[in-house]
Structures are given as structure tokens and as C-alpha cells.
Amino acid sequence: MQRLRVMKRLGYGLAAGLGLMMAPWPQAAGAQFSVAASALTVRGRVVESQAKRPLANAQVNVRTKYNDYKTLTDAEGYYAIQVPDGRELREFELIFSHPDYREKYFHTAFQPVLRDSLTATVEPARALVKYRKNKLELPCGDRKALITKGGDTLSCAFGCERAPSLTVRLPVGNEMSVAAASGFSLKITDEKVELRGAENQAVALQVTAVMFRR
Image 1: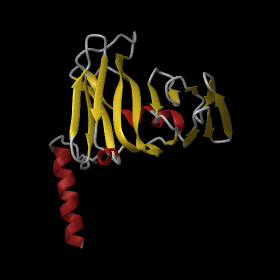
Image 2: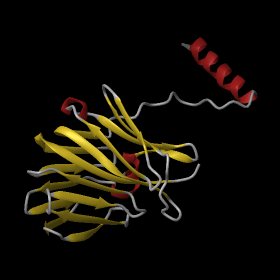
Image 3: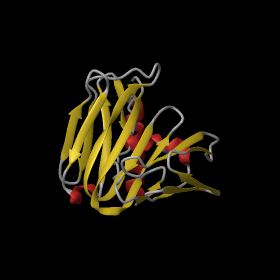
């Protein structure tokens, strides 16, 4: 054991002498999304952070346990991806990348804002949103704001024109909207988005992602 400690100290000393950084092993990202549904359409827009201009040719990747579903944004920053197999939606990641911008795993948009869990029950005629001690009841077409644990303003909107939908808008412009015909339950933490109650439905997920230059 003493010999092992000496060898470790020698290794760190040699690295320091050579000007090297002893970096930890990279950690694989966990599944950001878990959706109980028969199929999923992901669409939305990618914009850059400063002037919120559309970002063309950004790659959007829905990475499931079985496949990668990729596309590029068009000249106006819009994209659309379909995942037809419900089993692939149990765990997946939503990743945005561009050569000139920092790669974005979408769950990182929630991390510095929520710092706690947000839950919602979305029915055909109303949505109930809970965050810490706040409880919001949203009728069709209503929008209300929440003050997060970190002091940021979070906007929640409920729509029911085509299908009941809940839109959550974050301060810098990142936005996520979920829609399913018969409603659903939603839980958002600073690490994961979980959607339940839509096992036999097709779910639409709309995401606006704001990207920052490298």
C-alpha cells in the first residue's frame, strides 16, 4: 500500500513537471429525456445567443439507445426529426452542435435555472403546474410566470387548440413545448425531462435552442 502511494505521488509529480494536467475520465451523459409514447416528432429552431439570429446548418441529434436520428437546420434555423419507434423514447438525448458554437445537451438549459423539480399535469382543458411552493392552474390560452429558486423568471403557457400543450420558456430564450392529444404528465428536473401518460399517443416536442460561440 505504501509503495502504491509513492508511485501515485511520483506519477503526479512527473505530470506536474512536464506541465500536464491530470484530467478525470470523461463521464458519459445520462439520458436527458424519457417519453412514454408510441412515436415522437421533434421540431423547433436553433438561434445564436447574441442577436437571436437563426443558425443555419446546425446539427440536431436525437440519440436513443438504439439509433441516432440526425438532421441539419435550414437557412432560417428550423429543423424536424421523427422517431417512429416508441421503445427508443424510453431514454434519449437531444444534442445541438455547430462548428462555431459550443455543443448543447438540451438538459443543461434547465440546470442553472430550476435547481428543483417542476411537475405538470396537462389535461384537455387545463394544466396544473407545481414548482416548489407555487401551484399554477392554467386554462386554455393562459400564460403565467414563476420565480425560480435562483431568482430567474420562468414562463409557462397552456394551449389547447389542436392538442393540449405546455410550453416552458427559460430566461435566455431556450424553450420547450410538449403536446399530446389526450394529455400527459410532465416532470422537469435540472437533469432530466420525463413524460408519462401518452403511451398510445404520438407526442410532439418543440424545442428552441440558444447556442453560444466557442
